[in-house]
Length: 68
Picture 1 (cartoon, rainbow, N blue to C red):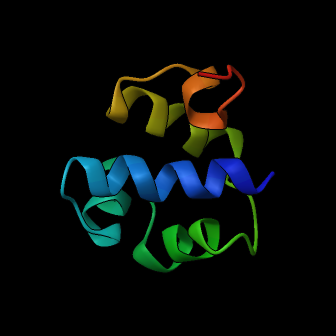
Picture 2: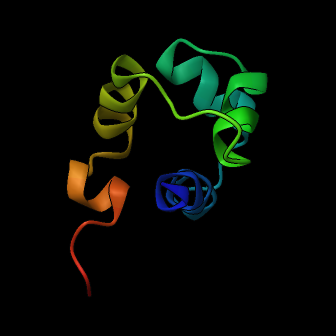
Picture 3: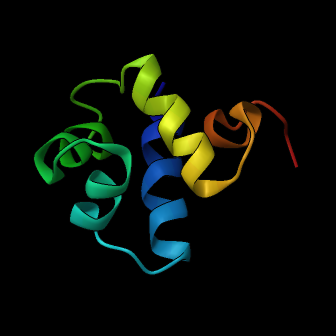
């Protein structure tokens, strides 16, 4: 499931926000974003939903389920 961790960082960097900024927007903390981006733990479904809303992307986009 490393794909989601890569995509979180990629999406965050694409819009130029820090891990702290993302954490604040989704109700988490920067340490938790770091844990996700470094594939230590996967985000809980509630945070996945918040990221989908924040990044305005689909589940498939976040988890890279569709090959481009």
